[in-house]
Length: 221
Image (spheres, rainbow, N blue to C red):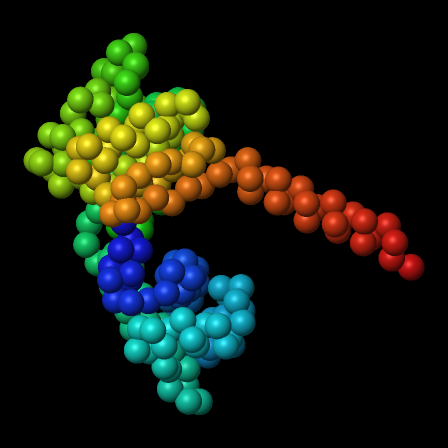
C-alpha cells in the first residue's frame, strides 16, 4: 500500500501517518499558485506543530531553506515518492453493500494514484450487476486479478461477519495491503499491512468532543 515505500525507507510509522496530510496541504497550495511555504505555514495547514513537521520531513532528507521555506512542488514530489504514489496501485473493493457501492463511485482513489480495477462480492445475486460502470465479479476471480492485472490492494467493505473471510481470501490470493472498513479486528500474517477505518469509533470520538465543548460552554461565565 502507499505506506510501504516509506516504511522501507526507515521512516517511523507515526511520521508516515502524517505524510498524507502534508501532501494534501501542499497540493492545495500548488493549486493556489503558491511556490514556497514556511514550516509554520505548512504545519498550520496540516494541523501539526512546526517542530513535528520539521522532524517528519527530516526523515525524507528535506530541510527547507532558511528565509525561503520549502519548495511546494518539490516537497510534494518527495512525499509522493516516499509514499509510493509515483506508481499506479490496482485496487479491488470487496463487498457491494451500500458502503461498497459508495466507495466504487468515489473519485478520490484515482486522484491519489489508486486505480479500482475490480468490484467483488460473494453473493451470486450481486455478481454480474453493474456498479459505477463496472461489472461485479465473484471472489474466485481474485487470483486471476493478482496474476494478470497486478492487483495489490484490497478494500474490505463487507459486513462485520464477513470481513475476516474476505480478508483471508485476499491474503490467499497474494494481497499484502488491506484497507478495512468493517468494525472488526482482522487476523493477518505479519507481512500483511492492514489499515482499519472504523466510522462508528470516529463518530464516538466526535461525540466525546461535542459533549466536552457543551460542558465547557455551560460552565463558562
